[in-house]
Image (cartoon, rainbow, N blue to C red):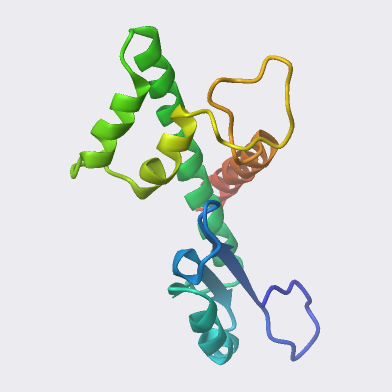
Length: 165
């Protein structure tokens, strides 16, 4: 559903998908779409088949903007979580207990991302894109270069809208 063509009469829209990296099941898949509403209505039944949620966000480009905002938030959450794991270890607290405290929490810190990724991070079983001689004890599953790209794009989006609005 992604299109950037400006041909007369052609429908335009974008569809940004999201899913958990730990699962490829349709229950974890969703989409944020924008652009031509009639096109969105036409493809919605197919989006319903492959995912549990879908959102129509108006003007073309808003689906991609939503993906950037969500990725920025997730990157910030994972950076803070990783720093917390490291700090708990440095003050001689068991990082495994920290993860358990977070997992049983029903409050503000409770987040599915932490429960999905936390145990693997503590066990150092997270797959990495490449091996380093001095590999981090808490390696990432999402290559840092992609997270940096998403953050650069989100910052660029913020800079653009601060000049427009």
